[in-house]
Length: 78
Ligand SMILES: [Zn+2]
Image (cartoon, rainbow, N blue to C red; front, side, top):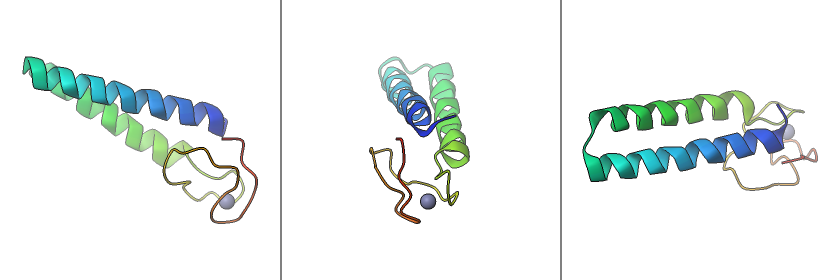
C-alpha cells in the first residue's frame, strides 16, 4: 500500500472514530462505543504496520504531508 493511500485510510479511520464517539456521547448506546474503540484499534494497528518509511522502515509520526523521511531523508510520496 502506498503512503498516500495509507494516509487517506488512516484519516478516514480517525474521522470515523470521531463520528462514532460523538454519536456515543449523544445517544449513550454501548455498541457505538464498541465500534469507536474497534475503529481506534484498527487505526493504531494500520498506523503501526503501514505508516512507515519505505527506505528505513521507521514510523513517520503524525499524518501530516511530508516530502522527506525525518529519519533517513528519503523523498516520500505521502
Ligand atoms: Zn526513512
